[in-house]
Length: 194
Image 1 (cartoon, one colour):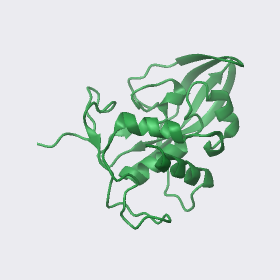
Image 2 (image 1 turned 180 degrees about the horizontal axis):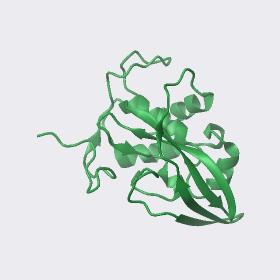
Image 3 (image 1 turned 120 degrees about the vertical axis):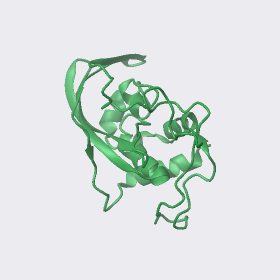
Image 4 (image 1 turned 45 degrees about the vertical axis):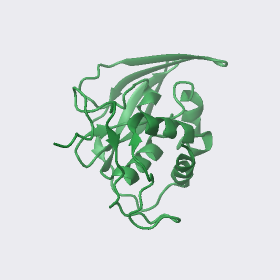
């Protein structure tokens, strides 16, 4: 009997000893790799993958640098959800999901799009959920989450207080015709991490 890709009481979360295996059949047209060659050549524990994504994140690879500047005290993956979802899709296949997040940052109402993945086995995983104060890669759209979610961090510039108020229903993002150069740079940074 094979071990499920993700194992936890609610169907997703930390893998413990289970390992993710890159999808070797995924088409890849990026320079430097032949078609079907995975981004990762070895099995990777889920925790290691999240750490590598955090190491790859930089201000210049964030989709919205202003959002990154405001939320990076909470997580280095702030503003990187789309780049992370892009890399996860290249690694394992599946689809990218998107929802609108309504939140307050230091008392000011804001709204942004957030992206995560649904893997080929139907499991949803969000490696950038830490930007919303979540752990265990739980997608913001999960029905067991109770809103509002609150997270505060002290920084040299003052306190950062984040409150997630609501999340719209998720939708599948259409296939990309072009790739944002920031995503390409993020992927390159990711490949350099170990």
